[in-house]
Each structure stands twice: as structure tokens, then as C-alpha cells.
Length: 320
Image (tube, rainbow, N blue to C red):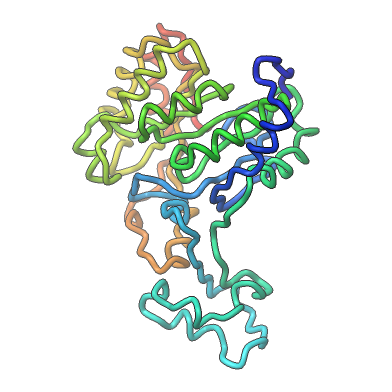
């Protein structure tokens, strides 16, 4: 853990107030070695303004809890008069009425039918983070991710302030599409910012994510004018979207023009691990026809960017 800074100390009254802030969490991933230095506890907040066609966590997009049905997990447990598979025979199972399911999501022994996303108090989440703290060492800590954590600013701020008050390293993974006032609220409580830059061409960005990148790029420019926190730019490398020299060198050029250089540029390889989640949500996977990139191609693209930003002392690496 990082040393406790007296400037981030909070009173008992403040702590109790922050612990009562409520948010919607869809996962807490413990012992993660990604999304920040050292061993991390990643807290996934629900809700995202973008609709990236390749999104690996489609269950993160909507703010409200959602029903997921995973037929392959069903063990036909026989607890109910009518068998569960009838649910998966529906053409659009997301339209199944909750009352038709009764208490099945609560007592399903395998989680084949379950709600994803739950309302949690910041104090409850911090209790889980605190259990991992002995394993953080000098580098590990808490990472807020999603979804898009900036869509729940009060909850994100509460978690960050509670963590820093205990000397726990804090990081935020963000796609950057939020109002500047939200960043003003969160940045003072961060030890590290992981900032996604997906594409410089605004038309391409809008076509495949649903939104322009103007706000995203402007926010990063403004953050880079501040003395802190340290920034890592992360680029998901997506075939058919930005996995080409022109797109990545454009991103490198943008980064070079920031007033404060990021520590690193991380290239994140496209994967299809989230494909089954779309089926569980009753949705088609829109990026199904795109192949994964070979490791040597990822290294080649990383080399192109590394040559471009070498003079600024920016490290480019695959993964992060």
C-alpha cells in the first residue's frame, strides 16, 4: 500500500457518509494483474455511454441490472414444476417478464439464470477491497473500471476517497466520455489514470462506438495540462477499426502533442471472450466476422508507435 497522506485523511463522520453512497456494481475481480501496477482489486461499475461494436463486457453498458440466461450452465436441477429451458426457447428472452421467473434467479444452483448488476454501498465494496490490501505490497491497489465509472461520479468518488484515506493506491480506467466537472471531481483522488484512446478519426469513432471522440480527446488534452495524476494511454487494437498503421500513428501523433506526456502507451489485443455474454443477454455479437491479430502483428504495430514516440521517452508495450 502507499503511505497514508495526511492531506487525504477523512474524519469518522466523512467516512460514514462516504460508506453510505450507493452505486451499481456488476463485478469485483480480485487478484488482478491488469489495469494498473501490482496486484489489483478491480471494481466494475455498470453503465457506459459508448456502444463499441467489439465490447467484451456488454453487460456493463446499461445502468440498470439485467437478466442473463446461460443455457449451457443449466443442470436441470428439477426444483421447479416447469423446466427452465423454456426460457431459452424464446426468440428474444430479454422480454421475458420478471414475474414469470419467480425466485429462479435467486436460487438457481449454477447461476444459469441470474441478474447481473447489484446496488452496493461504498462501505460494502471497500470491505472487499480491504480484505485484499495485505497482498497489494508497494504497488497494488484499487482500480475502478466498467462500463464507464465516470457515469457514477458520486459512487466513484466515495470509493476513491475511502481507499486513499487508508493508503490504498487508486486507479481509474476510463473511455473519457464525460463532462469535465466529473473529472474535476475524481482526478484529485487518483494515483493513476488509465485513459482509452480508440481512434482519432471522429467519423470512424462515431460509426463504431455510437459517439464522436471530440469530448474524449478534449478531456485528455485538459488532463495533460494538469500536474497529476500520471497517465497511461490505452489503445484497444481492433481489426476493422484501428488495427492499421495509419490509425495507430495518428494516435501516437495526438499523444505527442499533449502538454504532459503519458507514462506509457499500452496496446490491448482484441479478443472474443465476451461473445457468450451477448447470447446470454439475447443479443447478437456484432464483431463476429473479425479475426484476432497474431502476436507478431501486435508487436509490429507496437514497434511503429514506439519509433514515433521514442524521442518523448514514452514506452509502448503490448498489454497492460
